[in-house]
Length: 310
Image (cartoon, rainbow, N blue to C red; front, side, top):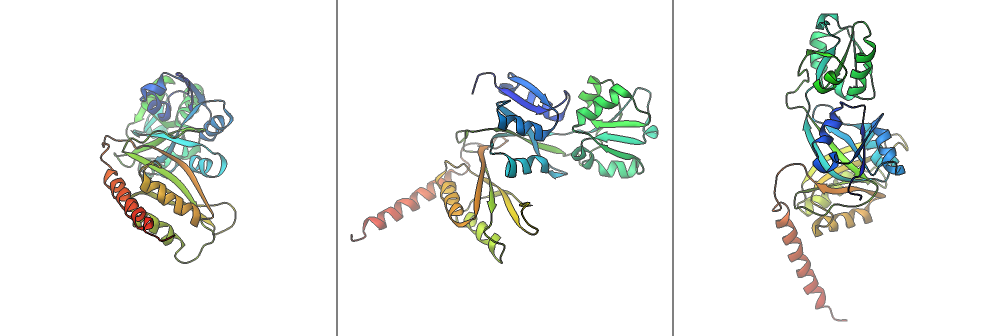
C-alpha cells in the first residue's frame, strides 16, 4: 500500500463518516475522495478507483447498515482491515431564523432518521421524512436551496459548513448512540494484535432442524466467543438464509483456523470477510489462553498418532 492511499468515503464533506475517518491519523493523511453513496464506495474499492473504503456497517440503535453488509456479502470480494467506533450526535438543522414549529419536512439519510424516531414522534409527528444519500448531502441540499418548512438531520459540523443553524441538538433516541465503521480493501489481512475480530458468512447446504445449532457448536466446542450473529436472506429463494458471524480472534490463531477449517468442510459456502483489530484498548492477553490450550491439545493428538503401528 502506498504511503498516501486513496481513501473513499461517503460524501459530501461533513458526514459522520468523514469525521470518523479524520480521527484515524494514518488514513487522514491520504488522498480522501468523497463519493455519493456507500455502495459507490464499495464499488470504487472493488474497481481499483480507490485503495481503501471507509463505510458505516452498524449503528447501536438502527442495527446493521444493510446496503453495506449486502455489498460485502453478495456483491464484492473485499476484506475488512479495521473497525472504528464513534459516538453519534444528531442535530435538527434549519435556515437562520427558522424554529422547530416551522418544520414540515425533514431530509436525511434513512439510518440517521431511524436513530431519532422517538424525537420525531414527540415533536414532529406529521412531518414528511425525505431520504438523502447521506446526512451531509441532506444538509447541503437544505443549505443551498432553503426550501420552505424543510430541515435537515445531521452533524453540527455539516450545519456550519452549509450555513444552517441548530434547531434542536442531540435528538437521537439514545444518548449512547454510536456507529461502527470499517475500512475495506481488495486484499490483505492485518497481522494479529491479540485483540481481533474475524467476520465470516455461513451458507447452509439446506435448511433443516439443527442446522444453525451445528454451526454454533463449532464455536462452543472451541470456547470461541461470538460478538455478533445475524441472518440475511441469500436472495436466491424465499426462506433461504445465510448467517453473518463476528467472532473474537484472528485467522492466524490456531483455534480460529481450526474452526474455520471445519466450517468450510461442513457448509455449502463460507465467505471470509476479514480478521482485523477490534476497536478498544484491550491488550494482547485476550485469546492467548485459548491459543495455548489448542496447541497443548494438538501436541497431545500428535503424540497419540505417533504411536499408531504402520
